[in-house]
Amino acid sequence: MFHQMISSQLNPRSLSLMALVGAGLLVSATAGAQVTKSGAGYLLRVKYVKGQTLKYNSVNTLTSAQGGGQPMKVTMPMVMKISDVSNGYAKTSVTTGPAMIGKNPMGKAQTVVLELSPTNAAKSKSAPGIAGAQFPLKPVKIGQTWAMAAPIADTTGMTGGDIKAMYKFQGLKTVNGKSMAIVTYSLSGGVTGSGTLQLLASDGTLYSNVANITLNAGAGNMKVSSEMKRV
Image 1 (tube, rainbow, N blue to C red):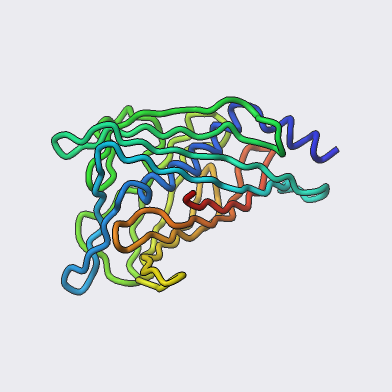
Image 2: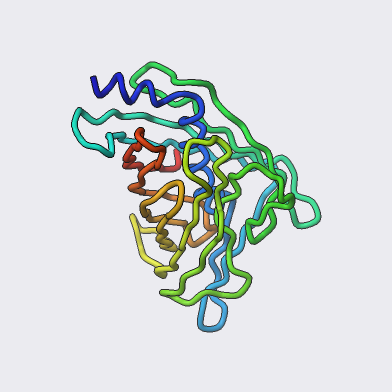
């Protein structure tokens, strides 16, 4: 019964929201964000490379926020392509999906195209709500936080409004022999929860993103435990 309920909620609009949440949080980490020491802090920038293709896969465990029933596992691929870099902006396409429940696809893959600056700011204010977190203009110290008013716009109508995020730079850490920049975040608004990004300090590309969030969609609220890794 629970699986039927969750499946009924996984319509194209809810899958679109999942894609926006996943990709919107990660675009800032997937295109060569550079982590460089600058004075007492670290400067976070994005170095986009023409022709770059990055692939990711996320495993998401969904449960009803009201409790009861068995969890459902949904996998979601994501591919990011940089087709051009000009005048400081990178033309970027992000394709998410199709979501898979076992071997069964749910909906179709979706692609958005936008131009991003070195601070991960979208060139057009009317760009799809998937640009993710902008980096601060100035260097950030370990423990410093920064907030975005609406890093992801809910263009699906699935939640009560835009999603707000607070990011915190936790410093550098060695993981599997590689130096990583650790950034944690908390979400509020249409989606609530928290997560942790691990970025390769050498070029800033995403190593992993682990999150526990709730999609706030009225009576159909869903809890999602998600782990995305580069493949």
